[in-house]
Image (cartoon, rainbow, N blue to C red; front, side):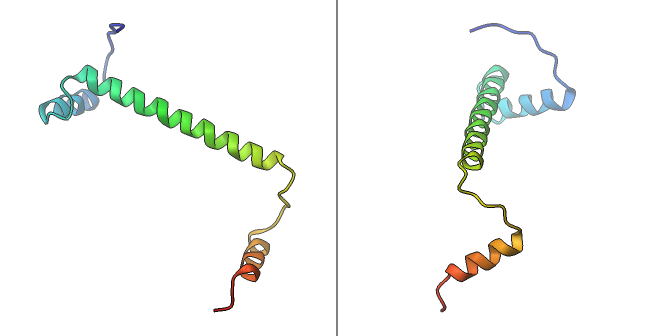
Length: 81
């Protein structure tokens, strides 16, 4: 693993120390690596969602509708209960 030296804001350093003290992580390095991994996973998820949205928008099957028009269309497809 690459060794880094970073400067943390006081409240972030206190949070990390607290996580280690509460045995959520064995060290501040473990906590920072976990947080970075979580951020990377979130970024992958957002990229996936953006790609799906773009694919949908570019598919040509979507017609432009107002919210009110969509609501009327959805209600038409609901069974009369």
